Amino acid sequence: MGTILIVDDEDAVASVIQRCLAKQDHEVYAAPDAAEALRLAVRIRPDLAILDINMPGMDGLTLCRELRAMPTLAGMRMLFLTERDAVAQRVEGLDAGADDYLPKPFDLEELSARVRALLRRGQPQPAPHAGDGQRILQVGEVALDTASRCAIVRGERIALTPVEFDLLTCLLNHAGEVLSPQQLLQRVWGYAPGTGDSGLVRWHIKQLRDKIEPDPSSPRLIETVSGHGYMLTGSA
Image (cartoon, rainbow, N blue to C red):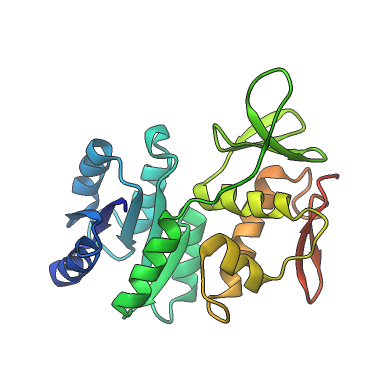
């Protein structure tokens, strides 16, 4: 179970979500606006924040960026509530640092499934790095420090969001193997087979490449295998 922060200026929506998740033994807090959300987040350090994008004052996108900038909240997952047909809004949310999104109106069972998946931590199988006691998972010049949950590429430590860490862990554990978007949706996000949006994978692959590739416009560490998916080679 986890500590969850709901941020939505619609009291009815926030109350329904809060009651639903509290019944599943989560510790749930609600904030009507970004200012209160920031105060609560510092105090309770939630495992997951559920953010509405459209709010008066500071909107959910800006709030997401503010929360992502806090070192003490580096491991917090973020789920955006978006308008069903607002594709640009989803892209903005992912760009701001969200891990996943759920279009309104949504089914409470689907919301619960998304929450469970986001709270579920991946279980990488790293090997100890000789000499420094850290636990390192490495393929070629791409490595993950599982203690600090950051990437190490060409000697440089790179901060990752929680979903970026899980995505790179999955790719490293299957290095040299082509993984389809559907496989990644299941293994990283916890989507049931045949569900989920491949655009979610595509966007986070782009964000990961922007951080670790020498030239993101011509990726060599994470290759696209046309019509099939993505493969980590670990060598530029």
